[in-house]
Image 1 (cartoon, helix red, strand yellow):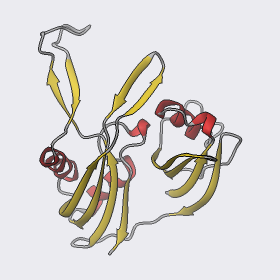
Image 2: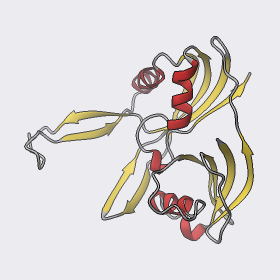
Image 3: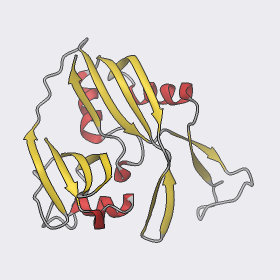
Image 4: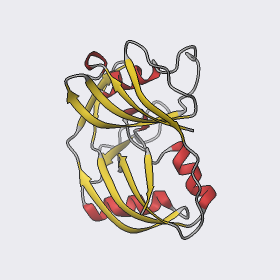
Length: 199
């Protein structure tokens, strides 16, 4: 697994969909591949472009759209009961049934995703996502401004939350799955990348 700092040019970082397309440019010759990377926007709207923290299975390659500033190979040495600081930008949501009982193309009642606004709901969502992988010892959720995207005929927004705090490792293999696959929905919009650091 690789962890990289990347700058995406301003022309490719106008919205989240375009930013995601710009990150794909770091992995040439893989047009049919499934996404095997996670990213988080660290700084936006700076003169040179958008600063990204990128975790990927393959080493990224600089190009005219995205410049790799630094890349290092990462191997986590985790064990149970290890306290770690963490950072996660996520899209905590719940799914509700359509109030008007409208049906989808399969005849089922439509479901809508709505953001969790209350801090207690956000923390409960994160605890569920961690499951047996880790226990939250301390967490501070910060709701961020809505982020907008457009592409492939879809327009929308997501309401992200930046979680920071301390976790205690429990089930190391389960935690490794979360590290590799990300947490929650919105991964193509820069959500789900879990960063860990020793205390």
